[in-house]
Image 1 (spheres, each protein chain N blue to C red):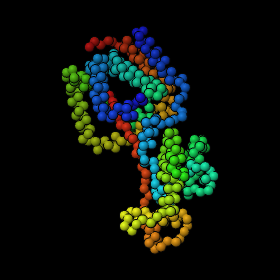
Image 2: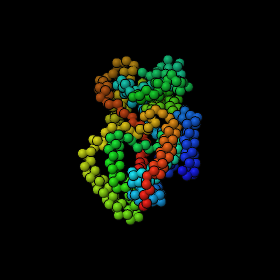
Image 3: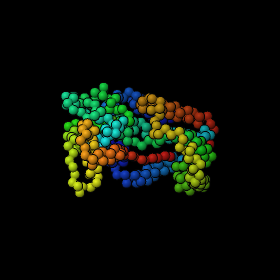
Image 4: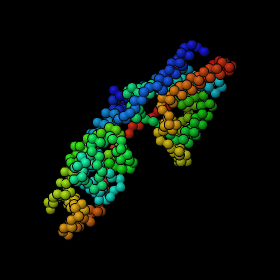
Amino acid sequence: MDRRYTILAILLIIAASGLLFLPDRSKPKEINPQELLAAIDDPARFISTDQVTERIIGADPALQLIDVRSPEEFRKFAMQGAINIPIDSLLIPQFKDVLTQAGKDKVFYSSSDLAADEAWQICRRTSVPRIYVMKGGLNEWFNTIMKCSEPNATAPSQDIDLYHFRLAARQYFTGGSQLNSGQREGNSGASDKKAEEVKVVKKETKTGGGC
Amino acid sequence: MVGPLIPMGVIPQAWDNVFAVLLGMGFGFTLEASGFSSSRKIIGTFFGYDFVVLKVFFTAAITAMLGLLYMSYTGLVEFSMLYIQPTYVTSAIVGGIVMGIGFSMGGYCPGTSFCAVAIGKLDALVFTIGMLVGILIFSESFPVFEKMYNSSFLGPKLVTDSLGISKGLFAFLLVFAAVGMFWGATWVEHKVKKVEY
């Protein structure tokens, strides 16, 4: 056989065996910076307090609220069904199963949405699927649901529906029963509303080829 | 700069077709330069007097594989962004048989047949017309084949994932197998009576 081909074959085998002995560099698995930037730019990760409330009341089995504040704050007040993973413990192996469980929308919240967004970024970088941030955090939730204000009589009907829904939600969370007849109507109206699904738009790449 | 360049947005999507044309010209030139526009050369693989098809395509595959794996390791290519052709088991088997029969009967694969048409080969012209008629028949009767066409869909599956071995080990085994095959093919070539064409 031609000596050149023998040399080329040996070179190929050397190059291939190099792959066998390369040290593993695949961990930790992070998404690339461009993808992360695009994801940070995309507001689809934010879920409004109303959407979260609706899903809590509807007992949505796919909802998993995650409180990223400290355990003390969590003990004082937490949202219904929430679990506490302080932001500095997010990458601890014991929480890995919670964060990666299939079929659950993990919604982070904190007092505002700053810490929650930070938690979201940490998880996004480690490719945790289906993660969201409650827009405005607990403060916003308190302002919109617990301290909801009545819109003007001339306000659009969506605003009035929303107000009725929030009143009903407040009653649900506080156990209060002081509603006037108009508000009761609102309550029944709210239960008809369907939970909105938040969809994450995935970038698809399609390039094919062949002989 | 991290590849793949177009999916990563380094080069705009609009350049896709420009690259397709340029790469196609390069591919065509290489096929013609390696003598692939002769049906006798390709058919040599089946009769055992010329294994250049096997050698060229296997070399291309393992070179690309090693390059990709090394570039992925050094961070020049983002492996997860590569487009992986999805696997349809039944279609692949049936299509492979049909293409193999066409290949050995006509002495061309789709790419080489167009190369040969470009330099004016009549047999290649007949082959491409036959191929286009075949495409037309398949497209028109697609509803008949649709169920089989879409059956046993596995998604974009990699051999390494199915076997549960590392990409490096698979690459090494494949290169080893390829070199062994090159050696075996050359041995057969020496044994079989040389055909002049």
